[in-house]
Image (cartoon, rainbow, N blue to C red; front, side, top):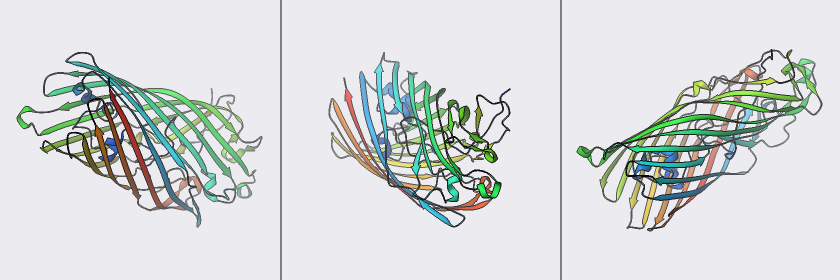
Length: 411
């Protein structure tokens, strides 16, 4: 039987390059939602509700569509045993699309495409002498999810929805093993890459009580997604015995966590919407990454432990209608990091995050345009890496800017 080999890498995904949510989760589903800090689970419906709370689409008439893009820039520095490297300046793009159709007074359907996980970055040179390169000096982890959904309006107060999720995932990671002198082994660069498609699902509801007409409650549960990947390890013709790296076809597995989202919305006036929400992500499911060589039965089992911790994300958002066509928005997020200080690596070089957002939107009977801007402030974190013989690691200067636009059309 084949032996399993775990390598220092992170899984990834197809249209989302950079993570600035807890762990490597992404929440930039629409410009309106981003401007309100993701606090759009229990208030006004839009086609992008397919990503935020699909039960809301029962409140949309006819056929509607949205197309959006978030542009991300980010900076961070990682210090390993006193050696510091910063991320190179780069730009990442997070696209999304949504289409909804009202089949009847009670049933609506929709299809969304968006990124829920992603990570990307490359550290400054020279990487050959940086101890952190043994973990990774460049990574691109991408996902894109397609979510066919059906929503049912049970009555005037309550709607529910269920959706499937086909998540396309891919990764490329570059590392440089430079500890050969300590282990009597070869120093060499190597690359790990792979891709796959796996399935998950979601369940959601929206409740607007007639006895408290200014209030509403929404929630959504997303299942775990157990990814299986096919790819290759390329070691440039070298063999690094101490970490069991050689050029060969490989397959791997990773479990991306389930999550529970809830929001409470309050409308004190016809023109003002307020919402507070929470996202609980069960990152403990992401405990390790396994890679298995397809052509070898003799490779020893090695596990790259992650030991992530379950976390929460708090968000607050507001929207004010200036007139029948224009609205302004603002939001705040506290995003708790799941990283274990004893299992730090170079792939997600930020700790807890504070995110401040603003935005504006215009709509008429047919078209809508929404814009958003967010700034991410990340805390520093100090710890160790058991993968590097408990050497100290520190994350500093983490920050990011995100610019979003969403265009909508009612057919």
